[in-house]
Image (cartoon, rainbow, N blue to C red; front, side, top):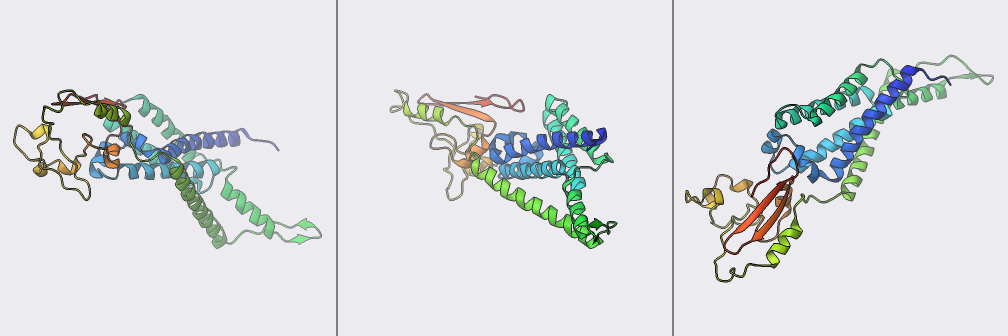
Length: 294
């Protein structure tokens, strides 16, 4: 069999783009909390409690585009989906990062590859075309062991095959996504829980004689926040229960860190030093989009 250079080029482009999209899709489905820092700020602010769900949806769409492009199944739709996803990624990184970065440059290159595949006239080694060809051969009449001229398939048969293959692809990817999510990590963000535990296990010698500061409680389901003042509103005398940011607050000290607080802390490594009358919390940024804070 002779391979045309254009066919090899087309397949190499498809596999390269599909591999990159599939890799990031798998990572987002397995460890969504590690990727919440890349959710555009305007989306994170609009859906503050659903950031991890947005990452899971994004990962599934990346995986769908990867398989559609790589297998050549619903190829045009897969290329359109890949192009749209990469435009969203470039736009989000550009807006949040304040301009050009190495990540933006990388994804602009991938966007160009996706557009190139979308406009590429070559259509070879596509799974849906191979399935149609197999059905055509099965329906060809035979005369004394020889095949006659191929009979065109009815349009409804072609449409049914393409719709059925698309449905099978989505169903298979849903199962794969559930398996990846089940075998991945929990929703806990990168919080230094060990550091928090060690800090609490060794209280300051003056802790017994010095009243502990009142710490804002969280607005978690089933609990009532204590009427303590927040650090940023202590001078104004505003009660935490009346604070405008109450619903966006999470308790991280003292007491155990809940899953919602761990998700909110994605992108930071947190450590606590209990100094008796005060507690020093250090936030180490794990992304260039954020800054360290104490």
